[in-house]
Amino acid sequence: MNHHVVPPLVLALAAGAVLPVGMSRSHWPHQAPRLALATWSALAAVFIAASSCAALLLLLPYRSSVHLSDLAEACLPWAAQACVAPHLAGVRPTDLPAIAVALALLLLPAALFLREAIRTRRLRVRHTELLNLVGRWEPALDATLFEHKTPAIYCVPGRSSQVVVSTGALRALTVVQLDAALRHERAHIAGRHHLLTVAAQSLSHSFPPIPLIRRITSEVPLLVEMTADDRALRACSREALATALYSVATGRAPQWTMSAGGPSAVLRVRRILTPESGRPVLLGLLTSAAVICAVTPIALACCLIQG
Image 1 (cartoon, rainbow, N blue to C red):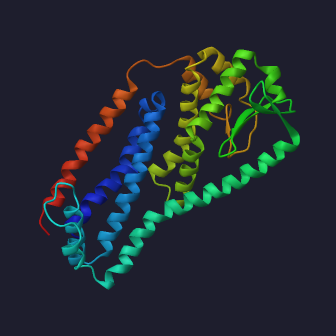
Image 2: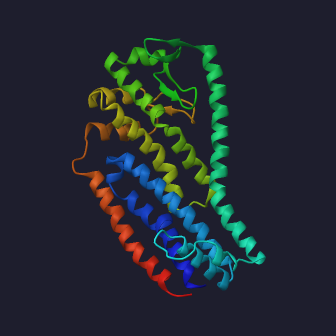
Image 3: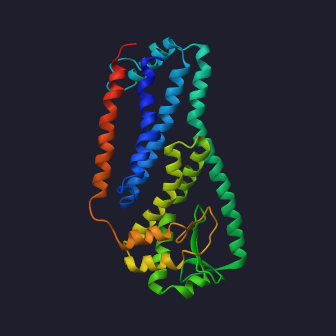
């Protein structure tokens, strides 16, 4: 193994195992869910790119990997040499299988994301057709109303998005509580949160259950709910939203929709009613900066070693 493979291996290890464990033990992700979602997304992107690069450098012969590393260094903005021509001459036909494997690692998550997005879209279309039969549009709510005694409020995201409310929810909630729950669901639609949950689900099919994948699969659905809670709290009281979430917690909705209640309702109600003090965004940024400062010297040291 040549030294050029060390930087991507270090990055893949940090993004795939070390940082996810650290984040899961921290309190700031639940205090700043938007920053946490951005951090999980960045970790996933770094892990995929670093794994692809590491696989390529491991499978390539030493001389070809040196040419590839030189090519990457030449394409940096501050490089004073030509980016492509002098280095591509060193790529041989026997290197193509290794390049194909690296490209497959890059494209597999995208392909599975597309497959999952198409699957969930078909489910949404079928559910919308069913709602058109059993529900009715309620202009006062700007939502679809259907008859059911169990309190339930959820949204069907996507191009033809809509909020769905059961008659049980109308009976269980006050006007203020209903408005808070509706704001929560509209925050999901406005933020396109379904794309994040689809991406998290597709990642679980792309890679083995390493710490990063396990925690993204469990944390992203919770974080998007917390993000919607925070968005709703801009226009409603904590008591109104917490009571609304508690009231609709037992309501069932299709798994691919986004419900105001659900299994995370108790944790979110506690978070809403007892907000933690401190500066979670600053703490999250400082943590990310500390990790970057720790990893960068290792990568630079390996890159500066002449091949």
